[in-house]
Length: 448
Image (cartoon, rainbow, N blue to C red; front, top):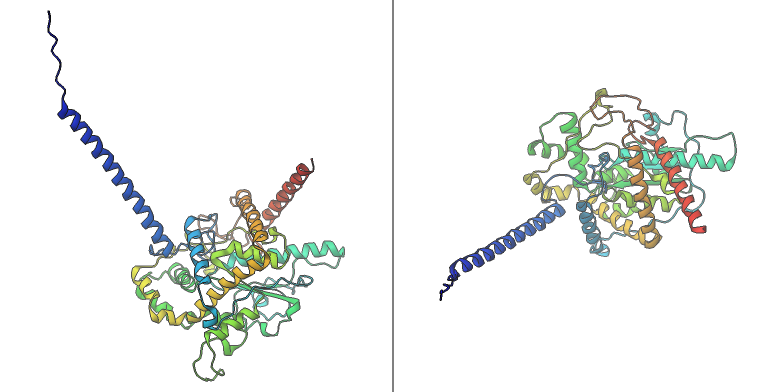
């Protein structure tokens, strides 16, 4: 009888394989944990700005005057959420500041015949008491906002003329949309029920950073060193810039602890309250789309009246007006040393008033949304985002700007309403028609 020998079990090999498998599994888990931690760290860094790149200004990811074709990012959502939370935690009573819900406009829109040669700089920088008045603040997305102002003025005039059925018409309502000071424009004496005065603010430090890189680094070809940056920021312009620009009285253009030549003492809180009272609406650059939807609701406009295409931004070219040359806009960057400076008492003192006004405007925007009705606002936001997406798809590749993508210049770009503002307006009109047709089709389907 043949004996069958059993092959011994290699327990060592089995144990080795089991050990190897466990090690492999452990290694994979360790790698996964590391990757998750890296994502968390990156998200945290971006949300608190510790990557030092000035990547935020509007909801469209631009640098203050908008980068073409950019889209909303997760980083923007995080920052917006953080900003809203911060404003809700402020004790405004203790600060002596009263944020407010901006009221809806009552009566006919302030649409009046424009001045002859309304598009000329000297006209735009002359006093006005009536009309649609936009205070254009530097590096706040202002080229795009000038375009929005022009589009509103144009669309309202078209509807007015159609309703009036008269030959004595005008193609655009009287408006202001260029850089100037409220004092120089004599807005103190504007007729309140015949003018709508508004502006949009950006965080003071972000605005200053964008201004340095735009004017000094990009245009003047200065080295973006910390020494040059800090030297530039010592200019008196950066000491509560918004107070200087937006105040109706020269005596309110700066904080004074004691009586001075310009008048009695005034505080950051008193100036902030006065500006909030003087303006019909103040929006926020970092919340551009929200601000424009609120503006449309306050004035009872069609959403397509505030539809826009982005104007200019970092990584692109400016409007070509500086030395008649297209200037490449160097993307802003904040070094660790500059970030430390921006957290210092020295800088905080220089922007004390501007930060207070900015935060109060942020709170006022939230209050205005609640007053208008959160549900109605959210519905319009969805509609506006959809319209913006369609506008980019239909128009972004077709729009001609004063400066082309290759840096070549065409002084009179077809389709721009004023310099590099309101470009692609005719295409936006076509987008409006498409959206109206879509709405009509939807209503027909609902009836069926």
